[in-house]
Image (cartoon, rainbow over all chains, first blue to last red; front, side, top):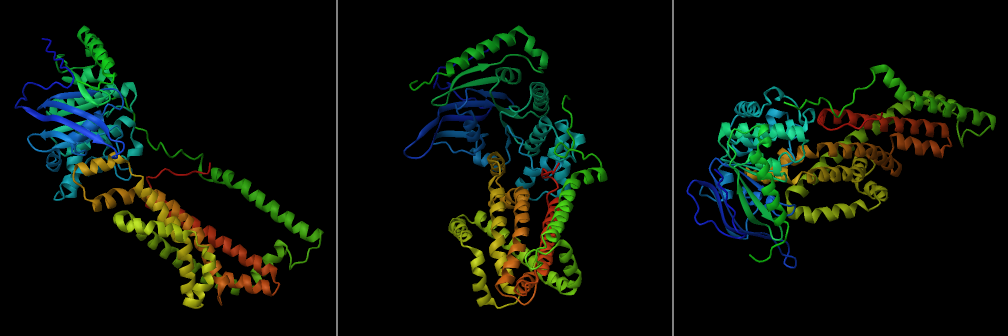
Length: 280
Length: 271
């Protein structure tokens, strides 16, 4: 039952499975000017199976957001290769395979919920008519539980509802991968829990592959199938933890002894990841 | 779901129509009336000569007696302000768009725009008269150089304050720079642009009067100058009053425009 892989820092997986939707090999990111070059990410080997829910967790400044941007094609790695379903992230983005959700919902305040939900799709697919876009937006709002709020402007929505619209906007592209950068980070604990539950339902209904960046140990374990721990200076994957808790998971999963054990284990991993590790 | 919709979070409900309006305006009205009464009393008690400080009643008399001249001058000046203001807004917006859209042109233009802002533009009035004569053109030119800057600057600030992750989202679906400009940056800049436009509206009034001072045969600025050479100080004040009324009218026109252009923007409330 306990399939637990603990990889040494910098270690590479023996082989990359064919059902991996996302795989990176030896990805490094160097940023900054010539005088002040900083190694943000070093030797990232990440493989995410199709349909999986994977979390990236680590201390601030470990480069987990940068890694997400690499997967989204927004940051080009200095070294290594990235493949999303066999193509480069840039190509994958052009094929609308990538949906992004950030901590801030970033809705357009002058558009209502349904137009916000279809906004990116409208830019990605210029051939779609206004009514087709609206219909798609409405469908996605219903998927995230906001079917009634279609005509509300962002300033009439709560923080959680705004974030639901942001998720609907990403899903409207019908992407293969949903990349989420601390999407619930600005929400209160109760809203956060209900958003997590909704996300799991959406994940199970749509079968998307999700890569989820978070600060929260509980959130990582509650949601994901696998958690990768990132270390700092330079940012690298130090350890990985499989979460064998069965789906569907609801809020009660946090009371299971196995959950508590996993929390302790992940906490220990996180603590050791805080130490800078120059050498492998 | 645990979340509740928060309706109209940014707009607190006013107490009630007329009562609220009266209670918010009343102090200002009372202060104004008291000031006018003290002014009237002071002029009478100290028997101040009316060509130095005319009493409010003298100003009112002048306003009525010269209403034909004043009305005609007001129409001329209002036309200059309106025309000059519109030209300033159009030029200001166009400059901001060019600076943002064409990177190299922006880098060339922006420092020049800032440099030009430091030229004392009132001093340009005689040159404009020299170039464009005594008609409408020099006034429009002067209003333009005085009023375009807040428009350009506020729109630039608005366009450049777009959240980076929103730009990331746009880039992730392959949005072109032009799409980002017109779908995101321009609408995002509107609240800020409207603030700049309100400043431009008040500066347009100043531009028109300065233009008329420098050389004109009509308009409220001309009336002020002409009346002061005649020591008709009451008429000067009457014209000044009308200039102020024009200024307030243009400001509120811009504010009403704002409500139509950016109904989503958080409102600044007096209360």
